[in-house]
Amino acid sequence: MLAIDLSGKVALVTGGIQGLGLATARMLHQSGASVVVNYLQDAEGLFQQRAEQAVRPFEERGLAVAADVRSREDMTALMNRITATFGRLDIVVNNAAVLRDRTVKNMTDEDWDAVISTNLSAVFKVCQTALPFLKDGGRIVNMASISGVMGFYGQANYASAKAGIIGLTKVLSRELAARQITVNAVAPGVVLTEMGQSIPQAARDQMLAQIPLRRFGEPEEIAGTIAFLCSPLASYITGQTLHVNGGWWA
Image 1 (cartoon, rainbow, N blue to C red):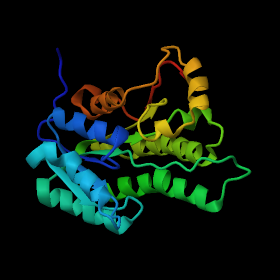
Image 2: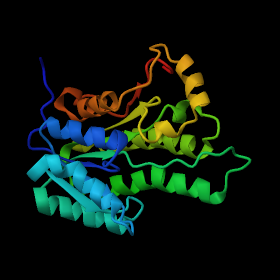
Image 3: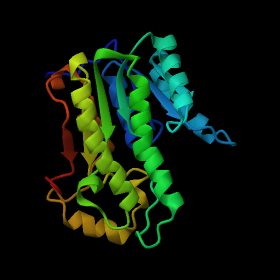
Image 4: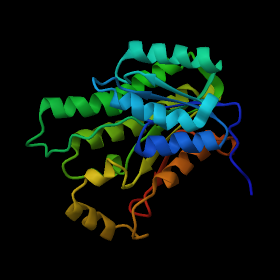
């Protein structure tokens, strides 16, 4: 069987301490990469504990760093820490995201700004900050969503951010092609991570009825797609959005 081999590569997975991010970090590590995840500082230190627990199995090929993806200063410090520790950066997976679902009628400026700043503006900042550090021939994978192409009820902020991710991915793929850096997006359907489980049961039942495969996705299925895009097997794929949704939208 042809295996994905990322030996010697160094990957940054934002939001990599839970859900799809953690599944992706584990898969990249299993494929041979050294993996860095970031976390937000909190008063109780819970995020730090989760981050350290996430990378503990990675041993010397894992690193958890306190850094806010919304802060350019934090991102610069993070990139310097990665290269100081591992000597290089080959892969960036932009996974960090938040939800603040409300109808447009009830959505506050705070709801809108929180999602756009984390789910879209931060991706721009991470990518831009990473460019001087990212090796030629590297990989950027941005997490989009089926919501960004279908426009789910109550997700004006989230759908707008994820649609923006698709546009940003296309532009970056053209601008970085001369360096042989591929830039792609993955648009999952509903995956029952902590974020997916926050969807009310009645809404989940309606969604499930529309999926031809009649099930929701598993985190490892999304992570496997990301690992493929990070590998030499996908060296001629760039500017694309891979829809991983069980046939819900094509």
